Length: 133
Image (tube, rainbow, N blue to C red; front, side, top):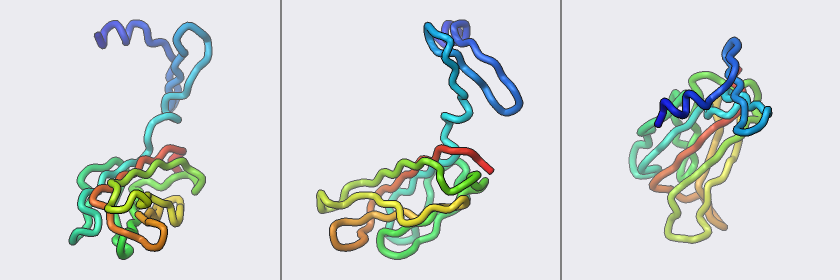
């Protein structure tokens, strides 16, 4: 199966970049731009010492109190306008949801909150897309 895929894949490569031609047309996509530049998975948020169970380009995480977490990137982003996706395990309330409190080139502060307060989440995850510095 992978052999067939490789034979149909066409593209060009330049310093640190791969352009891939779309199926059936001449539109190209910069593959490097679409790759996640950082991600992390943190189980058991708020249940004792927090830790990252698996990650890419994530150097550590700081516990900011109930439901507040700040992961840091090993290699900073080019600017603080990168895209992020947050996910968390729902708590006892359907109103619990992940939020972004602050974003910087080398880290971001995320939280789990409901209508009135920050709350802990059993699982938290983040994915970051953008340009590395």
